[in-house]
Length: 197
Image 1 (cartoon, rainbow, N blue to C red):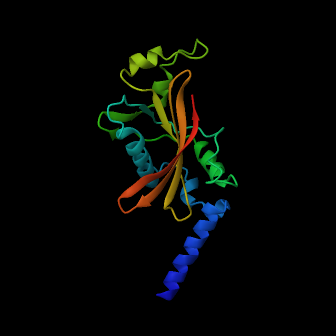
Image 2: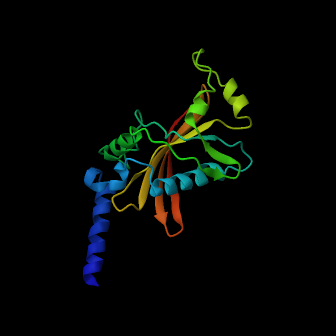
């Protein structure tokens, strides 16, 4: 029993070193973070994010949820989560794989929509593009939401995602979310603002 406990203590210590001290190198990130497809674990995290950020928005217009993961090229996870940049690098690497979230119901009356269908609604002849066709195509919605593919801690117990929503030319916000796996599934435990317009 003592060997099991000391093994657990070593894993916990390593996780703390990876997540807390900023030694977020490839040895501290889960191999799931480099998966070349959308995994069941990714889908479970996505569902938890949408449950927290979209499904519980009562009395508010829903967002159109895009099947294209949120782009991360110009984003960086908060320094206290990622002081060395390893978490951000892993997330950017996943975002460059050109993967898409599969069609699935998000919650009552809300589903993931093809990003191509969303993009087709924007008037590209104007600079900046107009939102009028989007509003006609997706009436009574609050705009479009995108969620990045998650990256996971080495023990696969924590996940990190970037989420943004846009609702007009100068309207939108972005957030970094930290999730933890519990016996009841994934739960958002920390949310930090990335930007707002």
